[in-house]
Image (cartoon, rainbow, N blue to C red; front, top):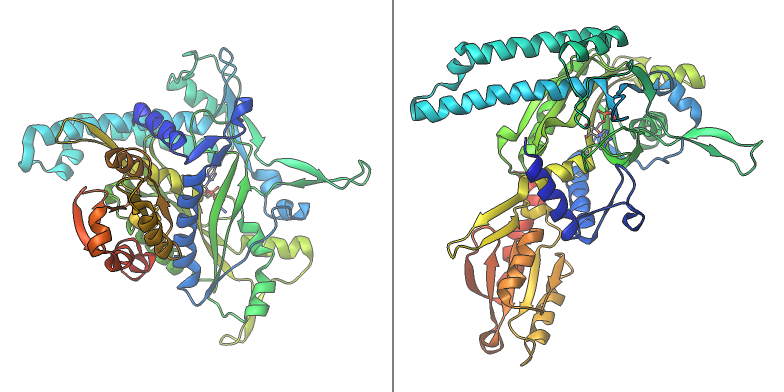
Length: 510
Ligand code: GAP
């Protein structure tokens, strides 16, 4: 866990036009953010990667774009009105409100940190001979801490399962957890708070009726299940995908894009024959993990984590956790949602939401396996993992975002060496040819060195410099971001090199 690194990433994201606090001139709005000129490009590229992998290359998965406002009964049927709440606890001295389970999870993360420190010490001491597996299963400090984690997890699970809020508070007291702001252990009772934002629809007060801002995109898929199935004639198993905004009245402090009040989800509901859902659950777990790994970050950064407490709709669920600078936390959820949602919408709407299986010659309510990933969390994972401060041979340092090339905001920057002698015109001519296939940027200010640094800071994989020799033999210098190697190539080769290195198709087909 690195608070200092997290702060650096947040300020880098702001300085280089990725993420700004919302309405900053009015001092911002808690847990709400705007994406800037580079942020929106990175975000769109992540969306395209997800959409291409889930919809475009699967013949049996289609997309929808449902409205954010939905009939209020949707949220009654889905269980959100009655059960979409978090157990919250207030600290009397700081007046700060926390999620009780998150306070306990943060406590456990610290013990987990102690285990990792012990393992790192072992690595240092025994070098190449170190047997990590054996060390983890025999070292007394590791075992003691592991036992403690298991015991606390079990107590928390029991309290959450039984909705025993008094026990949850007792656990916080027994563990002597203090408020991170005031350091005080003076806690209120734990209470459940609903996370949905409510507003009114209708122009006159007497006509107005309460509606919610959707807290997940999934319900827009469920209520359209029959519309899509009938108009697409898809046969089970098939999927419906959606990318869109979701809103939750989260109580958070200093978590940046990790936990926001307005965020975007990329969700896919896969409708399957009852009884086959576990097969598909395993299938999607593997597929989704592969999707993450294809971005090329260290595999150690990801881990699968089975849910201790299942949501009201699930018979199995797991998270793909990612090691953010604030520790290992949920990036994506994969849930076997049974037929809970469709069956419940049948009950509340009085409409049949069934599928006629011609092979079985019968109708049934399909079961659903869901994959649900936060777009903003994926964005945070990408920039956190890409952020590097490198010491160079000349003693200087450079900050570079080693974003996977197929996701970078800009694919190539084109520079004239100087602002005269026809070099800007030639550089623009090259840029004009490339810009229809690749997002490019043109820069003529400052030294080439400074221009390289600026492009490194936003992750641009290639910089192309036009100089006087270009006018003679039509060659340019191409410089690669990570190796900083420069090569002289004919201009007609630029597009091919970019295509080879930044293409999404390559990632999708490997
Ligand atoms: N339809 C299922 C569902 O919404 P979830 O685990 O509550 O499940 C799915 O949310 C994903 O949405 C999470 O794994 C996370 O990436 C993202 N997410 C949830 N709440 C978020 C928030 N407040 N800010 C940013 N991302 C969030």
